[in-house]
Length: 217
Image (cartoon, rainbow, N blue to C red; front, side):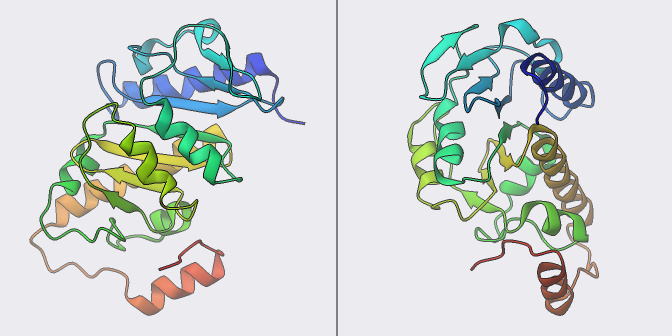
């Protein structure tokens, strides 16, 4: 038995506000969605701030994807539905314009198939391999198509010059994972230009095996 819809609405707004208050996304940027118990979706409305989401005005979709109540949903809806349609385990999706992950996406030598360097175990455990996608005009449906093209193999993508998008089993897991992504990118920026002692391939393989991480090439 999951949480009631009212509790889920409150949880979405509480988590969004926490991320906003800590500067993980600013202004009216970022969007968040979660599956409801009946197979529908709750989605942050277009043009809203993570700091001031209203639980009663979240966009509500039914299990068939029909918009049923609340304010109009985020313009980035194609990104969210791309994850839900391709990853059966996705119970929530969150997208931020977080500073350090965007900065890291601009670096010329970043690995597109494995965006984050193995600095700590946690990003590996919570995100698997993060795929760096190219730059798209905001709201371009091609972003959703690019996620669909990954065929559900990744739980997290980084939109170059834009921000990360992460799917999780529930809204708390998705938010924890995207925070880990931003924190790891922040570490990468701090360490850039140093010969840092990152985790070696054996240590990474051990983590992937021990924690049963999705790590397909």
